[in-house]
Amino acid sequence: MANQTKDNIDMKEALMAYFKSVKLEWGKITWPGKQQVIVETVYVVVITAIFTIGVLAVDTIFNAIFKGLGLIH
Image: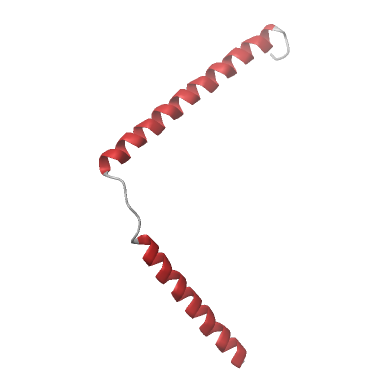
């Protein structure tokens, strides 16, 4: 039983040390500005849309080819 209490205390100290280090690292973060976040979000949306349209085009082309060859109905 004494071992279990010591283990609980060690675990509590380890958790406290972990969260202290997380807090320390959190303070080192340099967050981007609002304008940068907006611009990069627009880039991600546009690039995702372009890739989606590209995949749709390739799928449509292959679908037409396979239908023309009679491989699918």
